[in-house]
Image (cartoon, rainbow, N blue to C red; front, side):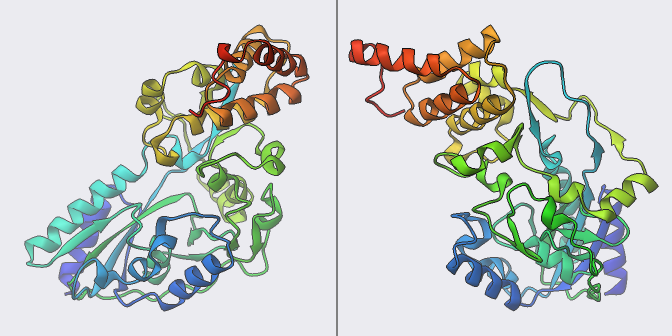
Length: 364
């Protein structure tokens, strides 16, 4: 089996992965317990993903009957952040500058083909709620859990996307690495909202990255902390010493034309649903409803916009008159933040004078 593993590993690395390891396909008992306990405590914040079915997400044999091994791969998405554009723009977390999951999926598909050619079942799981990929990576010896709940690869840091192959092949398992963080806890106070409530424990109810993907109103108490973030948050990773050391040792690549590190806020607010899904459909958008992108953009607008800018004023007026009550309420918050309470008052006066003129009584 060592020769088979050598062939699988070589195929995965040649196809573009930066690291590959093997974990036994035993149930993840500790991960299941953590998911269950944190969900019971409400720390999942309504997040589904692996919290939706912890039993399945922590048992590889639920995906492949008779599973023996997990081939786990990691691919770096580390890149230098470009300067913000001159126009008003919202910041995007690095992992979402482009589709970083598809290259991992393609590389694992190549490695899975080797397993299938040798008569084995092999199912590729990337960004899939059927497997806790971080636990698989730790068991495969790729890295350890940082205090920010990300997996840190030894000597490289945490700017990696993960994926796995569940297979019935019996491959040689790696030895998990010891904790490499030691006494360091710089990531925890770096979180803008204090979402890291204990080493390795994230309260999703306070996590900006999760809240930007959650349905409903964006919590008022965290809107100022959001700043210019439109999608995702990198603060805990940016504060991590192994990541900073890696940047000094090997400067990251420059962002290329395909990297979407910034999104013009006023363009987003003016775009149609079809345009927004075409541009940003690879992001997780609750219920595939572009209204949530507009919601996020209105909070960003309230934090970094200029209330005296005619284009900002026009965007606020449109949002205040929107048929969607969620967008109207976020627009009112943004207008108040930018010193334009007059716009809110004018809309309310118009609504009172001519209720039929608006759709304020109706939902989206």
